[in-house]
Length: 320
Image (cartoon, rainbow, N blue to C red):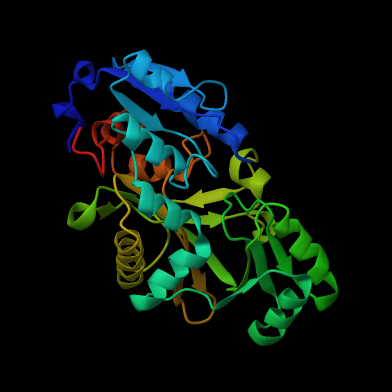
């Protein structure tokens, strides 16, 4: 959908859902503020709405016609708020209930990718520190240990020794009952933004992330100016096409809609791409990657926000 054909007035009264109750609340507020300002600059009647501060049925009482979901993590990216919006009959941006829930759960997403023959690092599910140690013996060290249902590297540990297994388990377990132990893929870190749904989904230029000491943690993602982003990533044409194809297959296999971002590791030595996760409500801050990829093809931040808003729909209860 070209933004020139979108009438901002036709979007009606729009709620930008941001904040929320997850561990990513701070980043969500940054994303929501950016989206709100962009939509207003386009002439949209947009208003901030924090579900942790207000009842969702206020959306109906106050006549909101659409919702732009700028929530991250639990209760915003995991299908819960999507289900509530379906019940309220308010069209919303991004993926539906099922796709949001699956994408948020890295274990289930990986299981689906494996059934589709899509390459993802080997993994095991752990519910004790001993199971983390056992997984490390089978998967090898270093090993990634992280909550199955969290984002922004929250609770993540690069496990280097069995002696640190308990601390790694505790760090992840503080955020989720399910702890994902994953083969650590050393190499180049890539991300692929996607716009659209189904066969119409298209990958934007691939971004390579070059973080200080290879540590793309919470601070380096959102607040540090030391992380470098190469867009488009310096890949040969065949490899770039392969990564984009894999990312689109991952996005479609989970039934994502509207927009999203797929994270990929390119293994050192043979450049084999491995799927890490798909994000159904990516960041929209000043450091965020989807706006960066959109700019590379001439889509401004404001145009991107308007385009995503125009794709808002009810996935279960009908079209916008």
